[in-house]
Image (tube, helix red, strand yellow):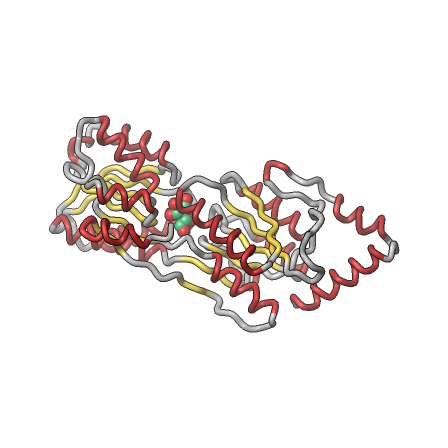
Length: 342
Ligand code: GZL
């Protein structure tokens, strides 16, 4: 499949170079206007890579968090290291931009399309178009909710439900099973927000004295996390909150600012557990302001391009590749921070 595509593209390039149907080649590239917002361009940039180089179209969600930036760096760095041509599009958190970018990748006849879906639903139509084009699809980081599992080759990413369970088990252990919890949820409709909530609630079901008394989306950003935590603290239940569960470190770091501005001690008056394990979270734990971070590894570049190269070599790959992660508490932070890669 991939090698057929490689052959077709090489033949097409040969025709173009031979001047035959050159207009058709150029016309194809301009069929659908590039969408600068989506960061996708239809005119394939003149490639400085040798003919036959693997070309991968990647649609990234955006740059909303330290985790996302580390994820992007890993993907770009690994493609560079392996001499794979990466056509990268930043969707600025918008599903319609991801869909536009995926369509532009089809036009550009890339060898593989990979993306991190901003939300779980709404992907069937464009993934059916990709399937018709014969280009394989790899999901990284987040899953899609589709009935036809043949619409993608593999999903490489964390088990978000397990991450939610780990956060809740830490709350049970550190509070003795008694807590009034404020929850900062991730992007509404996204796999990590849905599943991290699911895993946390699954564990606390067995602990009736652990109650989620405030819950709202902070959209995975520091700014929104701070804003929502401010409203939590000002609410009638604000004084009861003694644990914060944030679906990512960035929202926890924003909430830490809000807690301090409200005259309370983060990590002491309000115990804080979050998810990702970014460097700033370790720094906050060393400072005693964050109590626990559940790791979610963003360094997916190597696994992504292992899968791309396996596809190119017509090797079979697992339908689901789960990333390995740990849980880090304050006591470990000063030592662990020395070897963190992101
Ligand atoms: C998780 C990833 C989430 C991170 C956030 O795999 O999708 O999105 O937890 C990021 O930091 O914004």
